[in-house]
Length: 130
Image (cartoon, rainbow, N blue to C red; front, side, top):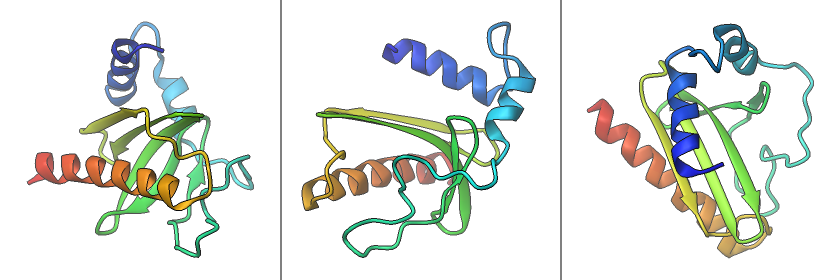
């Protein structure tokens, strides 16, 4: 997906749909699926750090963080590339980070990439909610 296409999709998601993405589809994506155990379990990490418990819907996941606020997002990882899309709980602010940083390995460098992406997103949320 191109950057432009991802941006259009996110805006449709945040605005409760369009002619391409219907409201009932958005509701389905946001509905938490009980008992989901994703192939990449971000609830546990090999370095002993605590990661907030994720709750999963279709493609999207809910995560509590940043002063008790809850966000819905989607992450993608490929060797040498990482993307992360987060939307605040109100659906009024969305942040997309696309990077060639690799977070697919369980090592210090990958953990640092995850940390920096999250910091970038939280700085944007803080900036636009202040």
